[in-house]
Amino acid sequence: MRMGMVVFAAALALAGCGGGGNQQAAALLACPTPGLLPDAVDLTRYRGGQGDMTALMLDARITGIVNGRCTESRERRGISMQFSVALSVERGPAAEGRQAELPLVIAVLESGGQVLRRQVVTQVVSFPASGRANIASEAVELVLPVSQARRATDYQVVVGFLLNEQELAANRRRGPR
Image (cartoon, rainbow, N blue to C red; front, side, top):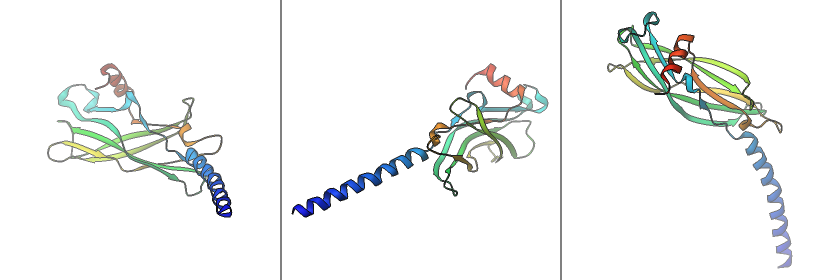
């Protein structure tokens, strides 16, 4: 009986050693939570830049981040982060055709707010007869390096529309919808 207790105690001690490493690795690889750029979640495009409703080409809104997950990168030096962007888009009376291209910008920031990487992707939206579409973008993938000095959660990932100066100014005047 005494020998059985010694073996059990040794097994517990070894299990404790292995578990700490797994917890440490899990902490390094924990997925950062992507956020939205408040001034860039709305995209309203007008033909000729006019603010007249008859010139409205499209009105789009980023409604959230969906299908997010992280896995260890192929090189095992970081994480591969994948997610999609949820979009609500309405076709305006001045739109030509049944498709629109929406420019999205994804930025990776360090904890101090400095931009480490910026990526622009274009999402094509096909409008049904109603002229309104709620979609999830194609999957976006980012590879973030991690180490003992920089964990995945030390990064901030933000998403918004790539806006021109007029569109950004209009969003700031209007405020959040």
